[in-house]
Length: 323
Image (cartoon, rainbow, N blue to C red; front, side):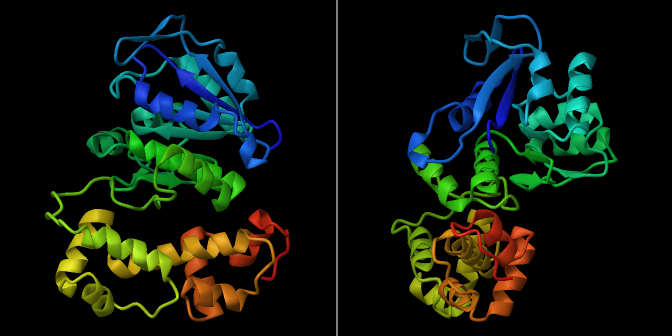
C-alpha cells in the first residue's frame, strides 16, 4: 500500500453525496491508524468550474492525465445513464485497466466502466432503478440487481448512495484488514460491515417494533456467537414466532437468520485471525461459533473467498499462516 494513490473523477452535474463519500474515506489523514494510508486526488474530466448537486461548485486540481498514475480510480454516479461518456475518458479508463489499476464505481458510475468495455463477462451491480437498463444495454455483463456491491477483484461496483460507502469500507478491509476498517467505520459512525450480497432495499416497511426486538437480538448474537443458536432459540429470545423472525430478518437484511449468523461468525473469525497471538485454528473456530475447524474453513472460504490461513498470512499481526 506504499503511496497508494486513489483518484476520484469529477465532472459537471457531479453527484455530491457519492463524491463526498469517496473524499471522506480517502482524503482525510488518519495518523491514529498507524498504517500507510492512501494518497488522494481529484481529477476533472472537463474544464471547470464543475457544477455539483445542491448548487455547489467544485474546482478540481488535476486533469485526466493523472489517471495514468492512479492505483485506484473511483467513479461516483455518472450524471446521466443515457449519456455516453467522452471517448477521451473511456480511453484513459481502458489504459488504466490494462496496466492493472483498480476500478470502482458507485451507482450509475458503472455505465462509464461498461462503456469503456472493461466489464465484459463480469458480474456487476448498480442502483436497482438502473439495473434493467444496464443489463439491456450491455448483455455481455451479469447484473446483480439486489447486491450492495460486487467485488470482481480488479473491478468493484456498488449500488447507489450509501452502498458506495459500504463498498469503500470493503476496499479498506481488503487493503488493511477488518480491524482498520472497523476503526474507520467507527469514526464515520456507520455499521462496520455490510456484505455485498445484502439486499439494496427493504421491499416493504418493517413492522413497528417498539422494543427494537430484532436489533437487540442481533446485537446479543454478535456478543454471544459461540452459543448453539437455532431458529427456535433465537425466536424465543426475541419473543417472536419462528415465522415472524424469518420474515423480519429477510426484510431487514435480505437474508435468512442462519445465513446472517454464518456471515457474522465469519466476520468474528476475521478479527480473530488478525489479532496478535496467533490463536490456533480450532480455538478460533470455537470462539466464532463454528464448532469445528472444518466448518470454519468451509464457510470462511465460501464467504471470504480465501482460506483462513491465507487471510491470516495477509492481514494477521504475526504474519504467520497455519493453513
